Image (cartoon, rainbow, N blue to C red):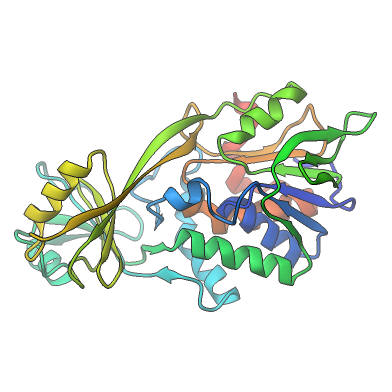
Length: 342
């Protein structure tokens, strides 16, 4: 059975040069499609830049996108082989809570004791009695990865229009997609992929299409810290934390004051850690928290891809969406993410 009955022979217009749109544009161009990528800003300058950018399943073992999340690390390793030098750090991740017994280990996970945790994170003041160690996990520079994907798409023939806001979607007299209107003029294509984050809902609404996503606050703190303070991706009840350069940390947490206090109390040598900046992103959050990926059946030629876990899933969904668009076949891994579930 086909999930996609429109042809991309008339060209694919990708709206949104965040990491998902850039990944689709790259994979589709690599497969030989005629691709146009358009964005109001620069690659990855929207909510992509506000991601903690942890690559892994993050303990999610159930739900419609569980199988998709399980492929995240393998898909990024595949992408890194295709684009050598992709800014990905394979550090592994350590997760623990303050109380309770250790959980069962999931796929790719190992429950490790305090001695092992201390060896992996030697600057900890007190290693927890147990932690979940996921050695295959990593993290990316989300803006850097997005820029590489856009450059690779362009090198394979994609036309890229940056600083060009999309003002409307276009349909032909038969009601099929025919491209988009922008501040720089129309861009034509028989297929339009909306990967515009929270703006996806507003762009699709004039067509009578409801894409139920709402902005969800995503605080991100950048900290100055001693080199080597954190070696892995560390996830606790207080923060998600990782080192992004020799003297910089990035933390996903709720409060800058509480985060600073928690980092200083968790690591030796962290007394002088200081807050450098705070960003508050607006993640596109569907009602059930799961990705919204697939065709809009009532509008032939329209396909949406919106999710709050965009950076984690980008390598996987870019490849799978490109296959659906170009081949017209159902990708089973995406079956739980279809927009018609709402």
